[in-house]
Image (tube, rainbow, N blue to C red; front, side, top):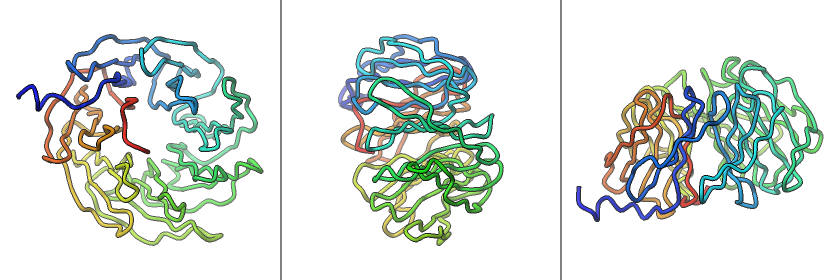
Length: 311
């Protein structure tokens, strides 16, 4: 591989959560070496940037804690304890709400965010195994998938109550909303595709199923307001979906059980955690091929870098 081919134009650290090792790997994207491995709490699965972009929040689901890390230097800033089972997490676009899904404990937590501290506003009993969260662009509704009861629920943030719930296909995982807030795409890990819901009216409607490959799981926007990637964990591929036409327009190899993804700012390099191979996989989206794999810890899950495309 030539030096030019190795240059991904990424400069900020790449963070990979090693869920079963209770660590986060910090990778230098220039040399593609692991610079350090930071202890977290038990079972870190997902991570999210604070609205002020000063902290990367790592959610330790079995450790009931949140680890705040500097996204530029990887320096540990603080640990917030007492957040019960924060499996998945998301800030609302208006920066007022922080929502977590308790995968083990079957509830959704709504926290108020003042820019530094979290205050629990409501704990909502949900359904079986709440998995992933999406919040609409107006910061009015949090949508959460129920992995083991095969449901999608909508939580009204103003009233802090469930507005509706609807059945989905088997084992819904990640959920992605189109920029106009009209459609929700749900990855069906127990099937081979993505279910599309129209949520523009008062009642959600399942309008289409897009076949991708076995184990459709996690989404990552392509940053162009037209396409989204979905990882097919069992099929070992990534599908690119045009969410205007609701068609698969490209496919990429992704060995080792692809899970979470991040995308370089120029859209060229897709970073994928290979859950079963203990590796971070780098895919060239132009060439549609794997160009590099970096060894990390056990059961890598969340991945993130500051040098990313729009979400």
